[in-house]
Image (tube, rainbow, N blue to C red; front, top):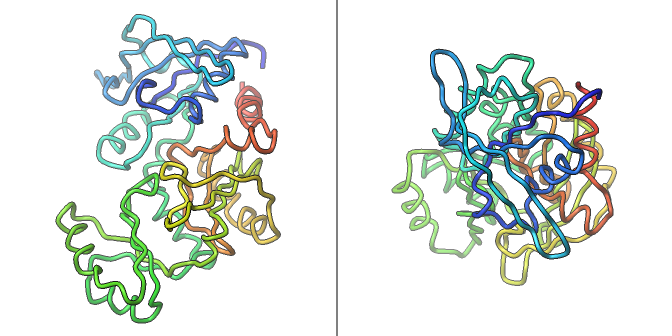
Length: 315
């Protein structure tokens, strides 16, 4: 790299985030340490005007010391996003029409502006659907709104998990035991909320030992943590109390990473988080993967530094 970069972060307002564990904050802080120019804008700030993509944007400053993490916004101004070298698309799910609209508009930027991850592919690769391209690596899975099909799946596998297809952070996930009488009520609740199909999977008992989050950078596994569900909880997401623990990649983990690696690189999905329970991959997160702060704390692996080394080498 022969110059400092102009970097714009499309993300949720910092005041709504847990800055101590937030991956986007860590990435932006490392960019600032490297003297890159960092700016902030929200999905609502995007402007498409006569085939130009602009944003009501502002520069921002970050600081981090021990447990104190702070930010400061500067005054906003409207600027073409084509004036930036890198757009970091770090808008958190849900994967809804607002998110899809943002991908369509960012896709119109010239190739001289690098959008991470590729907005076209992000739009076409929602994590719970994209992973079905690798069904040979997944637990048994059903995606449907058909009640008869769901009940037949339950009769076959008995112990099942029900998930909203576009949920995140462990929200709306139910573990249905063979003797559980709440299946019909849960399905009614989901079907009254939206028109989307559900994902139903066989329950993997290995989740009691943890749900492994692996971060892949340019298709290569660069770090991992194991997230162990708390007592009385089937979900391992850190948002709902999952405990991060140090871990190592197994032979099976490495095989899974190698199986999906070239697909990610070909699609411009450079920064990805995958979830593995036991021997099975359950999600491929391409929207705003998290976990690098926990990996650094537990394993001293600086993925924030690796990331910007990778980006800088593109310029």
